[in-house]
Image 1 (cartoon, rainbow, N blue to C red):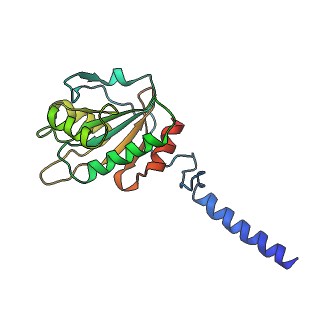
Image 2: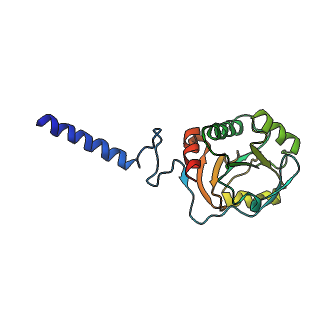
Image 3: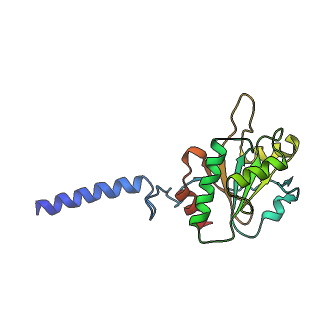
Amino acid sequence: MLVAFSLCAVAAVIGATLASRGGDGPTGLELSADGWAGAIRPPGQPVPDFTLTDQDGRTVTSAQLKGRGPIVYAFVYSTCEDVCPAQVQTIKGALDDLEREDVRVVGISVDPKNDTAKRAASFLLKQGMTGRMEFLMGTREELAPVWKAFAIQPQDDELEHSAHTILADANGMQRIGFPFDQMTQEALAHDLGRL
């Protein structure tokens, strides 16, 4: 009887601990009470209107990206040698884990002074993301409202850029954010699977 009571007490403590953490997902992910692995963006934040150019010289607008499926927005620059490649490799791994074809990946330049179409195409090739990711560029004036809407600090001689990945839904609303140091392949795949 005492053993059964002790086991119940231990189970209650474990249950309370898990509940206070928001619960774990099926793969051991720590999830919020709402079931997300990433940080929930403030409600009602749309992806801003933009018209930018991709690595192949094509014009891409935010309106063209809506309606198909979730979109991964990664803020990167083409000459980055550490954080940006690691960020894109995590995204690539999440895409490989997913069983859906409707996810688009869009890289937004945070270094318009140095990002060129040739460098962007080379970056995608090195990361194995040619055909799986678009690298959008523009002038500082064109990109500044996009950075502001996503709360991104661009690359600067004295300040490193915000290495964030933002997930938007098919309706063009920002939903989930991942700082680079908190994003895992499993967490990203989980949240994309829910969008």
